[in-house]
Image (cartoon, rainbow, N blue to C red; front, top):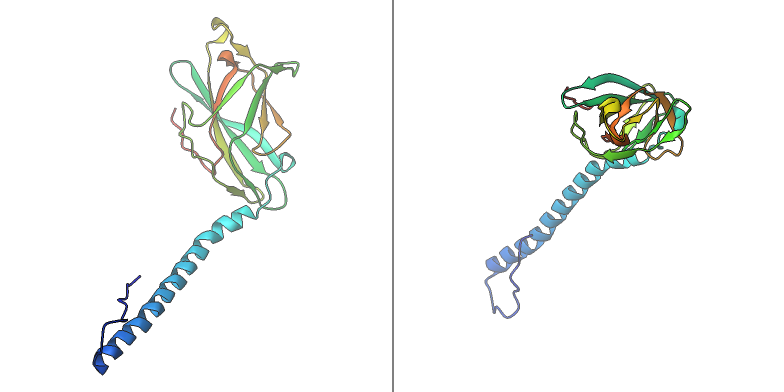
Length: 198
């Protein structure tokens, strides 16, 4: 903002100088007001997408289906898969954050497992962002683990994977006949699309 020099104590000035100073004094607040108005409009425009996303209801487990796609493999006994959460409801909803995961045996008994949120062997974590899902749209996350089958002490032989959507309190159960070293799983945040490396 332009700074004005105080005229008090400056002594007499010619009419032309006084008018010039008055012009500058009037013009500066008007320019500042114009800048504030423009800045306010920019803030309002930038906030619209956030407010619109925040107004969406959170996707509930009952309005989503969960499925596993695109098995991922590689060296050093790493393995992974893409998790898809599809909106099967009748209205747009939002997801934010990481899915909860758990392992079950063939009798649906819960097995010991630990889940790490963030980047995995196959994908960089996209970070927590609000993902809006129209009916029929899906979000995905990438799950990874390592396995050496029965040759690893503490290896867990799972039959099912529990998937809890972000912010949900109930889970989906998917077939998951996998060996998981020490029950350790890693998973990215949900996003509309996540690039993977195999």
